[in-house]
Length: 461
Ligand code: FUL
Image (cartoon, rainbow, N blue to C red; front, side, top):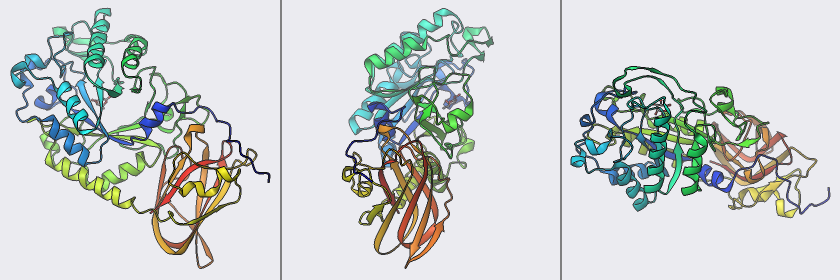
């Protein structure tokens, strides 16, 4: 075949630079904290007195150091949950931290956490619930202005922000200033998300938007820690009517680049409940979640409920740090680093097969335009035992691979490698697990792709 020096044409959609930088974060933390913490609730009705919010041993720097030790690259705080209580001294409502006993009304947890993140190099993000079960104005145009005032304060006074979370839960029963009734709104239109997006992006152009009709990253469609076994970044623009299936799997024909985020709590609840102290996910369960989220082309947003004292529980810390150590160990020693790499098709020397183990994410192996498949082989000097394979596409040119399968060989004897994880889409990152197998040759057959292959990295452990 002729040697081609021209890169493949992009296969749209493709990520923005900011989306790609966000995908590279892979793992970050969620913190749920508010009056619910003190009242043993998940969805406070909005009537808990501000005085009930009273952490006595809170140190945001300690949170950040713990989260860093657990491998988290950032943290998103519930600045306001559905109960409407604001963890910063907002001018938009009295229902806020300045009317609580915390630091005698002088505290500002959004400020304290945002400062601690900057000090120790974690990204900082904000969750501000659109639904507000406390505010008497909820459901009326006045509340929309209140909500925008909150977004304005949060984006103006804190940051830089890497993500802004508009939660999808909306409307229903609530306190609503004492009305105690049910209020319903049209979630795509009531809040004026267009304006919200403009406010966020005008001040934090790198930030991702989660939720609402202008989202730049998508919810995975469940809260169990599991991305679709097939997972496209491609998706249609998502509204409140989009099926959960699209959230979970994306869509090969989707016209938007909407990478997915898997949100899951380390405990059954998002908020702290003492009776869940013995239900904290184990390091083993957290590793499985990692493989089913990051290993399936999604980001992992792992929640730590803050205790009434204002702390991350020791057991949550211990389990999450062991998970981090385990996963780091499992994926640390790349057995393909020195392998000799060959492929049945190479677009040209700039796109040679050995670009997949040259340690450079900006180079990639690519096939010719009329070759939307390809076989790549790794030969090792001596036999190695492996049980994990990681593949990354050069997604700047779009997500392409639809299916692949694996074969091994030892002393010239070939055998299939059966994986626990599905071998379908790849995207930014795909990790598959299999029982330990000894081999001196590994072959990956990419048998279906949307266009010529563009593979930037392959590692095995
Ligand atoms: C959901 C909320 O209703 C939960 O309380 C929690 O905040 C979760 C992350 O998102 O939609």
